[in-house]
Image (cartoon, rainbow, N blue to C red; front, top):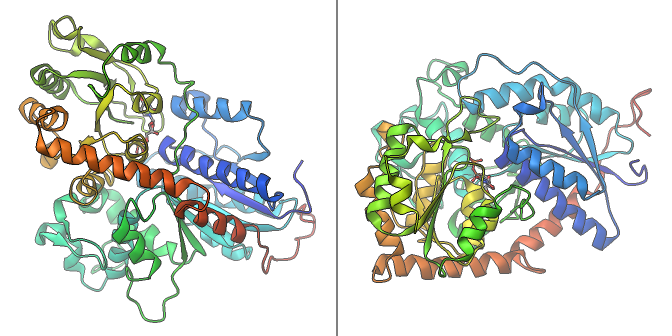
Length: 502
Ligand code: UDP
């Protein structure tokens, strides 16, 4: 039972592993904070419902299983099932419309809260929930699961909308200049911003002169929130975090900018219930920092790309652990297990002494933390990047969609923790075997000057991340401040008769 003497804080994650798990990890950190300070608020999670459990990504189900076994004082509120949008164009379109259809149920849950609601934290794609929060006079917070740089880009572009429309056509400019940031090549812009032909783009065109994407739509709405929580910190992204904190990103006179809480890196360490004992056992026998790990999150590749990867790995001569998955059209569920028959003939036999192809979900955290891992070829999902930084593993970025190209640009050019990989943006992120082999040698070979530089730099970032998360570290302090504001009840609307409000 929820404690009626304590205010309630509600969280609304979206059902995508990279978002949901990250938000629930924030919840766990706040719980820990609550328990050391005598518990200031009770925590409630609003959960959207899949039609059947098979629709949920196995990463999410594994996570929930382990969360439930911990018996934490979290109140889960399953929302009624709503029919998901059947016509949509891309993930942002789907998720935004999906959350929109939940608004009446979210409102009903908040009205039925056993104690005054002092905060509502919503995923970055759920900014429409701000309307409900405003109506009920509840302070709302956005959890932005990605980088401060991505947030800055979105805020900047949303600010330009309707003013200098040309600036939003990235084919006409080489670089995008966001106040406070290093100029970003247009080719590194988040993919959803580039696709002006998409249905969701058109859905959101308010006026003939004004283009918009869901991403910039949400960014504009973020300004109505009380705070924005970011999974990053000043040591990872100095320029962007500073620009946001000082209000440089949006130079708009008189504008009140939401408080920014850079509390990252938020990482889920307890996910080892993903079965992968054999691949860890295989790693135990390998020398320190000698194995290249390849894992692409929710991505799978087509057969021609898989073959190029195999050739590149074979030609490189280095040890590897390759998580190979088959792409799926169902992005909520994610990729499925791979059929190893798609690999070039004799590949497994020829590389069996130094390579392992893992066709299932892998325990990525356990792998990245293993002493045998010396490099990571990543699709540049932000969670994967943070996990790699935390364990000091240098990277080869292979961005494919969402904001991954922007993340890759940062890894190579700003953080200097990765060597470059030439990815053909016009061919859905295609990489040739030869290019992969080149990048692997550059990262992994002892004599490579560039490899040495990134290996040293990633160690620096690793220790900065760990310091940030320690007591009195920068991220810890922001989390503390966030916990303080979340637990404060202000101007909460009186109870609605019969609503269950006390
Ligand atoms: N992951 C995992 N095993 C896999 C693939 C992915 O544990 O085989 C985890 C990974 O550790 C990370 C998350 O899934 O925490 C993927 O999140 P990320 O933001 O990197 O990618 P996205 O969800 O955006 O594709």
